Length: 257
Image (cartoon, rainbow, N blue to C red; front, top):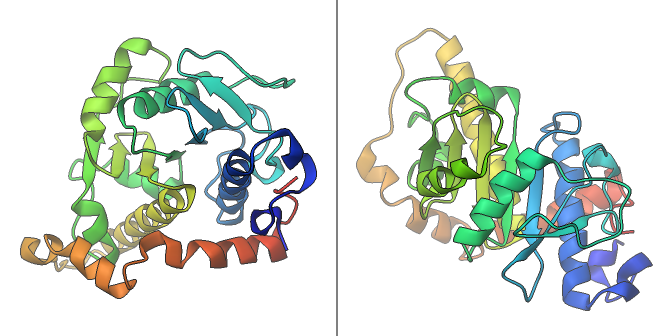
């Protein structure tokens, strides 16, 4: 049974219960990303706001594989880029640019997740972007923004354009780059990424079939939120997240140390 289910475990005594729980959940998201094979060596990143703050967030040590990330190894940084934890590792500079911009602008974004998956990046290179081809695409399409590629995200002057591209959406396609989701919890951001990746995988396969495609009507897409709420009995991402943690406990334990 992982530390997520207990008040104290491992290094948890150094943190409040709420902060330690956030650390464990974020470490779990990193391990699950590796388990689903969405990682890109040490590139890409997931961040989570430090509970009780508006200007601090947790992010991975730059240089660890996602399967190596633990709750205690995560690094706290502030919006200005100052590292607030003792760590032999630095923070991915592109990760800081993207995540600091979104956390500063979107106070509802408790977690921000970014990937470079092959299918996600393939669709990000397609001019039309996400097409209404699958049931999964409905939820993405009703809350999706696009951001044009400006090179590796290292410049502060890109931040306002990135924030504008995201707007109030939960999903952002970074053109020629990859996928990004925001969530009101770590679990929600991860489940949103699962949907986003599924949408792109289905689209790549559908287009590869070289046959006429059937598009979902926009009137159906407009009711996606209500449909998902009914299908999950109002729980949304909270329905699947605990089961993912149980899978992680079985297949890739150790994240909660």
